[in-house]
Amino acid sequence: MANQVFRYAIHRVGIRKPLQRGEIRKKKLEQAVKALQRRIKKNVTKQKMQLQLTVWNADDNTEHFKKQYDDKHDFKTFKRVPKWRKELSHTAKYRRKPIVPLHWFIAIGKKGQVDLTRLAYEPQKGTLLKRKRKRLFGPFESEEAANAFRDKIMARREGQRNTEFTQRRRYKGPMEE
Image (cartoon, rainbow, N blue to C red):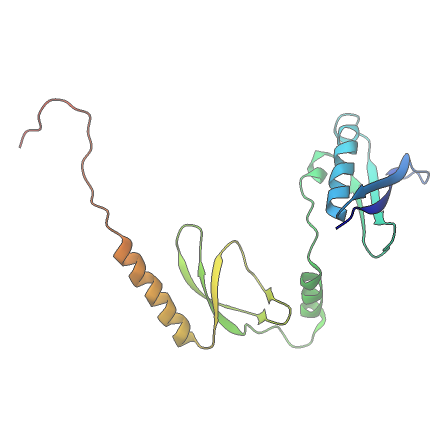
């Protein structure tokens, strides 16, 4: 994929004439924004300037980004919400019927917790509501099937557990009975 042309303008807050405008060539909008953020970070943090950054694709106007930077905390996060998530949250907000969890899943957490969860899953969009850093198995057609899978995982876990606890100590001569 070739680099795209992104145009940008950097404004002082409250002043219409931009401090700087130009073009930058990157593959994605995120990369362009990151590069421009690095360029303005010192001005915002050290010189205490309030700046507004606007970036847009030269060919496709729908792809754009605009943010005001007041202090160093504004540089912490840059996450674009995926398009399907926006649409989904929009439908969740404005539809009359609530989104009902549809399918059963087994979620395995970071520290090995095994959970039975029910999520709203729309396979045509590939969406999973409320997925949070967990490995998910499913969807299962019924709660019984999900529970059977969960029991299978727990049984396998039990089979793998073979810790024997021994008392470790620094050597202080032979151990007395």
